Image 1 (tube, one colour):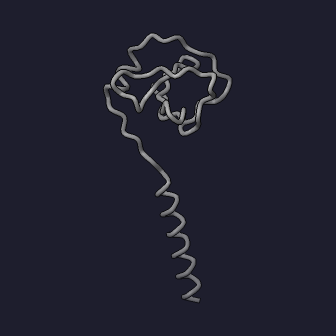
Image 2 (cartoon, one colour):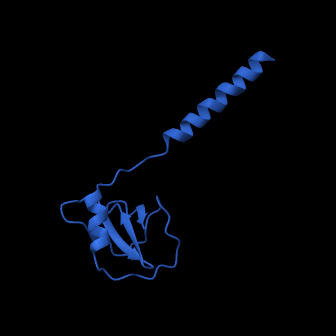
Image 3 (cartoon, helix red, strand yellow):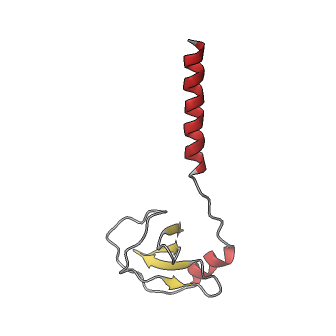
Length: 95
C-alpha cells in the first residue's frame, strides 16, 4: 500500500512540474509599453476574443516598434495589444 501511495504522489509531482515548466513569463521593457500607450493608431473592430498566447489573423495589421524588432502592437476594440510580430501571438493586453 505504501508503494502505491508513493507512486501516486511521485506521478502527481512530476505532472505538476511539467505543467509549471510550460508557463513562460515575458518581461517587456517599460519603454515598449510607454511607446504603445502614447501612440494614436486607429482602433480596429475585432470580432474574436483577444487571448494572451493566441495568434492574431493575418488581416490585422501589426505596427512595428522602433528599435524593438521583437515587439509590435495593434489597437483592437480600443485595447492596446502587445504582439510578437514574427508569430503574431498576443504577448499582453495593456490597461
